[in-house]
Amino acid sequence: MKERLVIIGAGMASGRLLDHLIAECPDRFDITIFNAEPRGCYNRIMLSPVLSGEKAWEEIVTHDAAFYDTHGVTCRFGETVTAIDTDAQRVTGENGTVAYDQLIFATGSQPFIIPMPGHDLQGVLAYRDLDDTNKMIAAANAGGRAVVIGGGLLGLEAAAGLQSRGMDVTVVHLMDHLMERQLDPTAGRLLQNALAARGINVLCGAQSEKILGENGHVRALALKDGRELPCDILVMAVGIRPNVGLAKATGLDCNRGIVVDASMRSTVPAVSALGECVEHDGQLFGLVAPLYDQARVLADRLQGRAAEFVAQELSTKLKVTGCDLFSAGDFADDADREDIILTDPQNASYKRLVVQDNRLIGAVIYGDTSDANWFFGLIKNGTDIAQFRDTLIFGPAYQDDGATPDLCGLAA
Image (cartoon, rainbow, N blue to C red; front, side):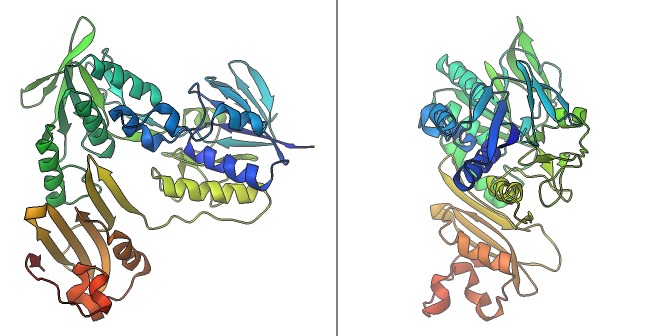
């Protein structure tokens, strides 16, 4: 008799878990998936090309109806789970109840909406799923002006997508430079200049005060300094929070996320969790790589194999509005650290390495990121770089062949 496996959430983490289970033990589980969205798994990372018009929705679907049907997965999409009885091991949705032997929370995250006056006006949007994307596309098709609050990756992708569809876009960012979690101030300014060159206005160090409306619809964002930014839509892209409401109501221990051990077990028997909704060793996870690692661990454990999730050193390698970026490790200023910097103003290229005790501990690159993986390997492995410290900034090509780099633009 098959084990009854119920999964709540059809995001990328649970999609990868499903792939493992179907490939490795196709006859072991009778699987039911609930999802609040009226659709299955798609590549959420690729929503930005859908917004910009570079891709169609169908191109980013990873698990279509035929997949679920072929593998006998019961899909309860567009259905919200209303209650879970962990003693009886039953999940109740809007359309009925199903029993489980193993229950998986993969409820993901939800966008944070700043609770400022006017946040509930029509035309104020989040940017998290396909429905949000479609609303933004509809607004852009009508033309006009857009304000995006948030100068992180998601906000900048929203701004670029809306601008590519013809809107006049302004990005409002609270911090002094863009993408402050991934970039240092110099790289942030280079990115801001590149956005300005393509017609996207950026206001850094700007604090939003309230959203102004007219006839129930947004008309402008008011800043604390008294400026008003007229807009037809306003997009909030100021971060995400683990979606733990159902887990808390069910009795699972939650801090910022659902508390799990290294095998992805929650504190309730027969209930596991993975993805953006979980917290492990006090850490939350928003990038794809650790979510896929969690899916691998949980798939192993469900099949009776020992496995433990270990959070890895992560790097960020991105293309933001056509600009290549890379960052890894710790690049905060500190008295006992040394910076090695290479700039090429003509080509808008910048590279900063942070060295401590003959170890590379951080890197920020804007422009040519072709050597990013090599630098990341040095950071992750704690490699002693003393023997090639003088040529480190020039990458792997200069470590073995004795080539002499042009030292113009080098600062240490």
